[in-house]
Image (cartoon, rainbow, N blue to C red):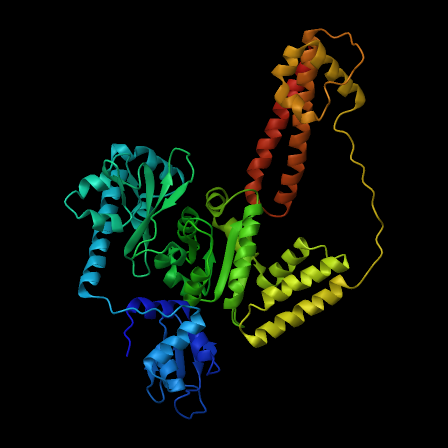
Length: 538
């Protein structure tokens, strides 16, 4: 019999939910933290067969049968170990490897890597509170981190010099390189992380497997992460899951945000069930891992275009994982803010309101369909129906897929195919400035080119052909400059009043955090109105 190391069997267990594997043979119902059904290994009328999704095992309290996904497939289908592995690999979409068991030498090597990463973390932690780490410490504390939070998440600082390379000089270079902490250069080893605020990355067991470093000088990218190693795979690692696991069970859901600082602040301000993908877009592996803990997920993204795009991608990825007991929702933080900013300025109550108002998956998918396609036309409806069908076909639960189809068929009939005649509204775009103002600016630009150069940033926004002819005017250079400045202030005030109207609507909708911005706008309007009044009076 071929041997397979724990890497591959663990990969199968991580990829596949035991509820899905057992659910192919046994009708399961969730009660508490476990799923229950009638045992397939002996006859019974009262369910005594329990399945624990997070721990990945089943147990029958009637006949005593107990095991994981591999033993279940072997026993329920009466096949050997290799055949069961092949069957599960097919279900998981994994290619069968030809692995051999890990040697004692390989296990010892991995343990040594854990030891190096642990020692590096302690060095980074120490540096954060030394003079070299002053800027990093000020930054993280200004972001609302307390000393207790810094200690809990073991945040540190990587200085500009080669801290790691210099402190591990007696270690074999290959071992140090394998952790991703250093690189080999023309003049020897050098640190991969330099002048970075350091966030350790933990595996599910609480061991440090990698780091995420944030720049402090404004350089891009803001975050760099350890490259993939034998201990760390970015696409399969969820930041904060080791801290959030128990809370996910208590809350009966997980919340996914976009960054690690957001995740930490959420965990420490009333939402301990929060996690984040790590320096990469959300992946199927992330969702598979979370679904092992709980199938109820709230995606919380920024309300900008990038956040909407990320939400649409998340919707696409999560479809194969939903079941009839799943509750998938989408929440958006408006106003160009993120959860960290909402929590600092408006507190937990405002953030909870955003989370509680999250939109269901069925509504979110319907909304993006209507947004992305012109459903008022036959062609647009055809494209939209193909889009919906493609998403629905990813649902693996046949009954649930049928329910989604019926739901959307009803919506299509009621909202797309009930034609009503609407009055066509003709809109004419008016010029931003009148003819007199335009001619005056053309005259000034040609008569006083030094003024045109001085205010070119403003004048270039007005969409005026300054090569055109204009009537001669009786304006000296002082009056000409006063005219330009007055117009510039007027345009700025128009912009402020427009923004005030938008922010007022946001405040009326219940976003408390927008109130401070409204006050700032009022102060700015008053300031520039005074300037304009003074300029006119001169």
